[in-house]
Length: 135
Image 1: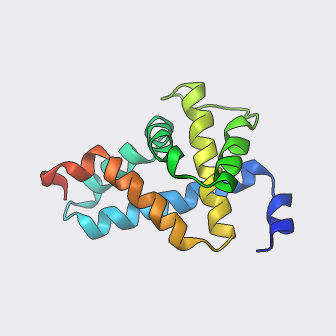
Image 2: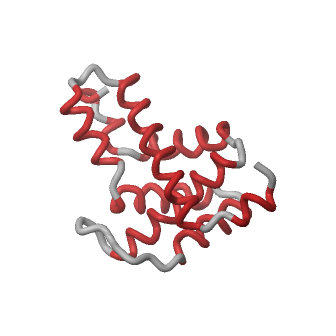
């Protein structure tokens, strides 16, 4: 997608697609790195795909972002939202929305390699990836 078209997409729409991208990455990782049954896989997924965890992961990768990526993240983080998660703070929700907008932006830009790099940083941060019983 060209930059002009990409910049015309509302930030929350980037977050909408980024949420799906991130969710799929987590599911793929869990299926390929765990022999757990689907119920346990879902619990592990929920541990990673919630605003509190996403905010924590975003903070851990922020220093690895390019200037362009940081701008997209900040746009997403600063977007006015009409709802928030019942399981996280408003601050966490904004940070998670920024991360989702970043993943959506990179996806639509065709930057799968960069998405994978950032997701690898997240996986290295994720607490469940360090536990031998869950790998």
